[in-house]
Image: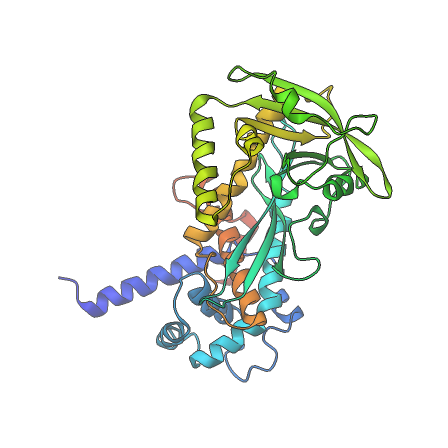
Length: 387
């Protein structure tokens, strides 16, 4: 029978082995980034970057409380500190954790794209909240490449004040890229901004948040046009213009498909449930719009007919799934910190854990049965010579 002490030693050895393997997935300059961001500055003891990060990941990745993390860190001879001292370290690590996330983003952005389909950039944001009825909220602005599913940008802002809302101006846009976004970004200024940067846009229409016109500047009769779509799966597109004060109207395409009966019933049920909860009265046109999927796009018509545009819009769901993984697996949806620095450090740490997990999963798909990459011959020979 295995003794308790022997079992504990086996678990400890396994943890050490796992840690050595995990380190191979860190960004190449992870230690240097600790120095550059002054994460270890002022420490009187435990100045090892490795031990420092390992303790942080016990708290951020393992979901342990500050007090439990401090106790386990002492037991494992990683650090001898109180829960208060650990909280100070978390605050102090904000810039280091951000730099680690950015380094992983740079790695993922360099992966080759699948050549059979154009690269799409999926854009969205999500909210996380500090505990308690008066806890502060934060917004994570996030963009994801498809089909590689690599995050290429993220940003954390407050949810109140100027420059904190959902907007395409939150993201660096590049000429020629193809953007997908939900109806929260359906504003004339956002689509004009994307066009000015040379980016192509595909966005879910929010009929109540944007004004559509004809080329002559007259209001576009959307409800009247929808009356012609009566069959399930029927597709149509119309040219429309987006006026914006101080700018020439922007020509875009409105692509529409009629849902099937099941999808319509599901959409109407959701609308009525939300209206009942908020004590609102639904307008007839809102119920009518629920029968269709409607998107606006500046994708070129010669390469993207309406059917292809609507088909591509479905890929936007991938970023919704990503947020679900963040909130369920990385516990990103509940923010257990009470000041700005520790809150942002916690968010960056959770994102680092999530991105590291994505990298591990991507490698696991490709590696041989032992689950990790072989060392290069030069690395192996160097170790032999040292021995």
